[in-house]
Image (cartoon, rainbow, N blue to C red; front, top):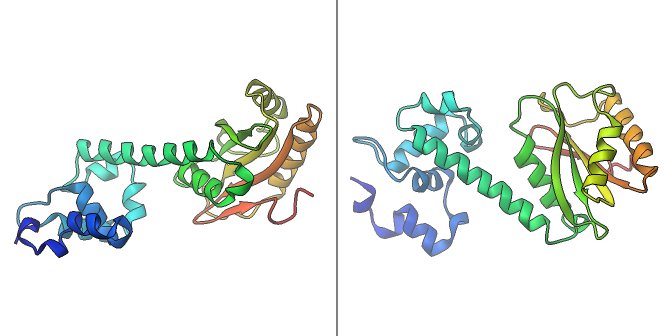
Amino acid sequence: MTIKEWPESERPRERLLEGGPESLSDSELLAIFLRTGLPGKSAVALARDLIAEFKGLRGLLEADRSTFLSVRGLGEAKYCQLQSSLEMARRHLLETLKTSSVLTSTLMVKHYVQARLRHVDREVFACIHLDSQNRLIEFEALFKGTIDAASVYPREVVKSALAHNARALILVHNHPSGKAEPSQADHRITERLRQALALVDIAVLDHLIVGEGHVFSFAERGFLT
């Protein structure tokens, strides 16, 4: 039986229109994205198989191109659709952050930096530039590779902040290992940057570390007082 032959109350699209996307399971949401299944297999059944194969929806969403294309039922078109959907979600978060004070949107900031950096397999150091009302100006990745006290240059961070006319910064980097707890090098970097930015009257409001399913906040732990 195809999805079109199912009772309307059980079809993913109809259920979404009736109860909203939050009422659907991961496989039902993925089925709507896939649109079609395979011979003898509905889109929902294919979605269930894909979620099982990738060990969850996140595994599928973060799969690299070659892994994604190696699975029957997926192809270049689906890969492009998925990547564009993910990027639209990230840009939506970014645009939303630009309309409100970052200090009142801490959870949204964490969601945004997770969306940007959680799946990256090497360390990236970035800055969130803020205006005088603590509204987001821009997110900028400045350094890539192994991040330690010697590879993050305060001069470049200060130069970037001044170029964006920022009044404050939130420092951000990821730990591809998955552990979000800061190292001694992370503490040293934070202090060096605070001192350098203070010379041009720019405050560091927080330093966020993106790990596996968790974002560590220096400010929340009282490390910036």
